[in-house]
Image 1 (spheres, helix red, strand yellow):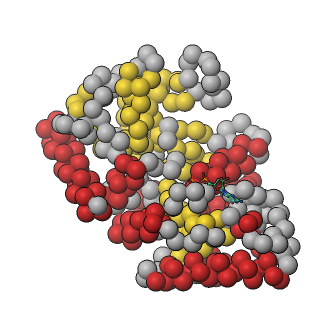
Image 2 (cartoon, rainbow, N blue to C red; image 1 turned 90 degrees about the vertical axis):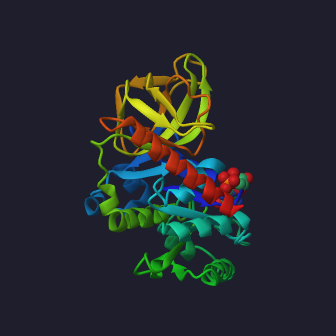
Length: 344
Ligand code: GDP
C-alpha cells in the first residue's frame, strides 16, 4: 500500500512511527526493510494493534508499505491503475484539510479505483488535547475533555465535507460498514501514535476483504516492476531501486527497462537487498540474493542503466519474445507520458 497526501501533512512521520513502534516491539524480524518498501509481518501488526488485529482472523502475511513515492513514480501510480499499490492511505492534516496535492491524490485514486482510507493526522494539535501515547482512538477520546473532543470532531467533519464535495461518501471509520462505498476516516497522530492501532486494523481488514484476488500474485511468472529510483552505488555504477509487484526476477535474467531514449535491454548482474542493521560506515551495505519474488523491493545492478527513468516499467523477458516485451515497455511508457501531460 502507498501513502499519499500533501507535503508536510505527515506521510513520512506516519511511516516512521509505524516502523519505529514495530521495531521497539523488540523482536528480531519485527519488520523487513526492502528497497523502497517496508514489510510488517502479521504478528508485529497484531502486537502493535492489540485487540484490533487478532492474527487468527487473517490469512495475510502482513502489510507492505511502499515508501512515499517521488514525483515520477507517483505519475506511474496514476497510469498503472494502482498496480504499485492495492490500497492507499491518504494523509490529511486536520488543521490544513484539503490542499493541492490532496486534490491530486484524490483524482488519481478516483480514476484508478484504488480503495483508500483517510488518515486524519496531527490530532494531538487539537487545543486542550491530552495525549495517550499509542492508544486506540476510542480510548484516547475517553480521556479528552468535551471541548477538545468537539474541536476535533469539527475538524473531522470538515474533511468529511471536503470528501463529499468530491463525490466520496465517508464517515468516522468505526461507523463504516462497507469500505468500498464509504471511505473510512481514521483520526491519528504520527507524533503520539494515537489511532495507529486503528489504522493498522482498518488496513488489515481492507486487505483481507478486497485484495484476496489481487493477492493471488503469480510469483512463478517473469518479474514485473516499477523503477522507484535510479541511483549510483559504489562498485555497481547506476542501479535501480524497484518495486516488484508480480513474478520473479533472478540474477542473470534479461530485462527490459524504460529509458529516457529507448527501452534498455540488459542482463541482471546482481540483485541487492539492504543488509539488516548495516552500519552507515561499513563497506558492504547490501547482500546479494539469487532471486526475489513479488511483492518486494529490490535493487538491481546491471550494465547500461544510466538512462533508466524513475517511474518506468521493468520486465523480465523470460521465455517470451524479446521484441514483444520491448513493445510492451514502450506502450506502457507512452501511456505514462500521456497521463502526465494530461495532468499538466
Ligand atoms: P510529509 O511531507 O507528508 O512526509 O510530512 P512529514 O512527515 O515530514 O511531517 C511534516 C511536519 O509535521 C514535521 O515537522 C512533523 O514533525 C510534523 N508532524 C507530522 N505528523 C505529526 C503529528 O501527528 N503531530 C504533530 N504535532 N506534528 C506532526
